Amino acid sequence: MNPGHTELRKRTSSDGRRSGEIDAFIPARLAEQRVASGDPIAEAAAERALRSLRGEHVLQPLASSLLRSEGIASSRIEGEVASTRRVFEADYAADAVSDHPAQRIVNSIRVMRDVIATNADGVSPDTFDRWHERLFEGDAVAFQPGIVKDRQNWIGARSDTPVGAEFVAAPPDVVAEAVADLAVFVNRVDVSPVTQAAVAHAHFETIHPYPDGNGRIGRALAYRSWAFRGLVGPVTPPISRVLLESRNLYIDGLTAYRAGDVDAWLRYFFDVVESAVSYTHSLGARLEDLIVAWQGRLEGAHEDALVRRLAADLPLHPITSATDVARRYDVTERGALLALDDLAGRGIVTHRPMRKARRGRPAKVYEATELFALLDLSPRDLA
Image 1 (cartoon, one colour):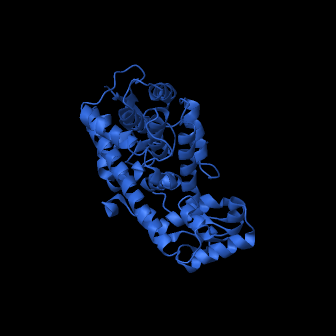
Image 2 (cartoon, helix red, strand yellow):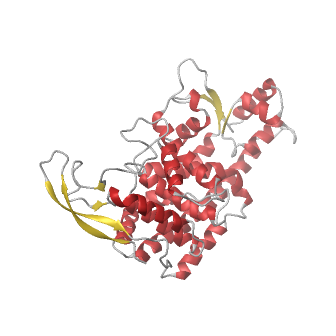
Image 3 (cartoon, helix red, strand yellow):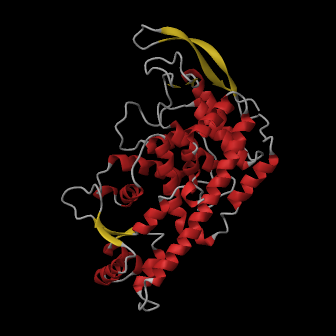
């Protein structure tokens, strides 16, 4: 396939003092191109790996945490950093927490939820705009979220001119057509979903349609291809955890794609998918071990006791309060508090105030800190 070509254009710096020529990338139309991997065996292996997650019931309780993990790692690739605990707290109780860095990452997680939840629908340029708006919700930025760029953007070189840049993205005058074409490509059903996801992500990054946030939206777009085609269900492997650990190879792969070596990019992406799935299975195995350990600490508790139900449901609700528990299990708040304190006394949860809590609010909750520690383990840690 042909991803596009560069076009020589004249460019002057914003202060008018520096001018020169730039090689801007002009994306090719994908909608009607034949798109296929040169390595169908690796392609099929990656697809089998993704399908293997659909029948893993032990992973179901981790589904929401895996989605959060993808949002956290995707944001870290772009330099947005907050601990797993802070992000989970900001997602759990945004009104009680004042943590702007964590909230920015929560926005990435909400984009991922949108991507997976509307999996029966095709995409359009409006879909990308909606995700972009959600990504920057509540964020004071120097551009209008949900609106494609009206100025040239680039990677590397000086901030005031793309002359000498490592990569000059698609010029603003070709973006609308390129994004509409990409949406048509993502809605196709005659391309392998793993290859489609890889190409969609690399092509979106190459167009770079927005002033900021392109990487996070582009990585989310890969999941839409899988969800739309029924390849993944609630359990989604966090590919950004692997991309984060191999950032240089990731950049090399995108560079290869832009240079026309699409198969080099696909080979890398297929490896990433298999590694992310392997990481997800390993997390599931560690979660089983953790649940067994928790059950071992419940010696003496009645089989039907609320404390056992709470421990079993911790992967679904790693942060909770007595009010939450009372509502969820239809018990009194005092009964919920006694059960949570029992869990805390057995070292299964920790009773603590949320970090970055707003003034004047108690914001004290029960947290499964061992689960947070598990989610902090990288693919390398679990290998």
